[in-house]
Image (cartoon, rainbow, N blue to C red):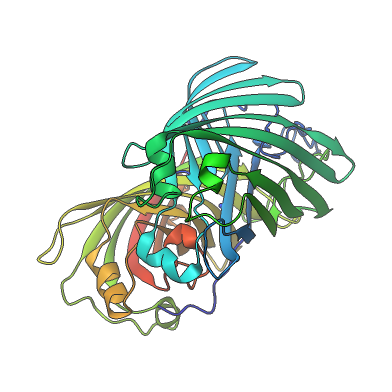
Length: 459
């Protein structure tokens, strides 16, 4: 599925959660931690205190291949999401929901992405890297935090890690040096390093590095990371392994709150009243075999099997301005139910994304929306698998998610203040693998598209 209009405006997949008060504790994931002041003007006596721990980014990761192969390195495109509140946090390629927490201690349900650096041409067939799940204990004190975690992959091969990080910031720079020990079970090492051909016991590897964020202007930041890992002797001595040390790096850009600045509240003239900061969206959609370019040109084909989906999204507002423009950002987790048909069974899909809205007025108010995030499906849908089968790709349950929408305010249409918080719209629900550029999405090119109509209520 070709898409040359791809835009990135980033893990785990979290269900709908209630929005609580902002936790003012330090975010070790380089998320902004300084609470912003409230902008007060004569027109607006009090403004919203936005959650200041959010961000979205994208970049390129380079990793060394430790295996005895002709290729020495592999590259990945990674979309990243950052968010934190009293209930959970999302930190790029890891996330956690709090089971219990206080000012210094946390016990979390935890997930993080495990990279397996192998040659690019093997990644679609093996799809060996994934989000693993387990439990995490985190201790946070001033600029320090210490993590302990136990995880396992989908086949119960277990491992754990301990990590120490220190947050240093000065001016436009934020640096996060880290050091980590990883304890791996015998079955984990035998599968991922011995390739189920060579026996090896459990062991301890080590890696360390530094993450960096540099504020360029307004909400724009540069992101970077450099790290090095060392394999234990028993693993390094395997015939399948060629390198003891693995270097990895990452460079990209992202959008975050401005540092140490008052939040500018861009209140557009089209606002009729103080707007609420949360929403619930209910949508119903129909699959189409057309690619995204064709849909945007209104050249859409009909799915002959009439595959349909129903979705529910919750949104909580992060800010009402981006680069001082009246562009609203929302964190929006969602659940999708793909209905059964003659070619597929019922399928569940979970999404986490950040969505931007721009409001304009042509008589009634209209809004353009664009979302970027992650989508995980319990089983790949027919409309997706049939296209990938034609291209000889192995499908991936985890893919990049995009949503494009246009809606109109129902209250304006019917001149009713009671319906002023209700919007009716059209959206495109899109899953794809970013043109084979990311092993996180199975190194595929293609995906699926659904066109939907929805009602969105703000409260």
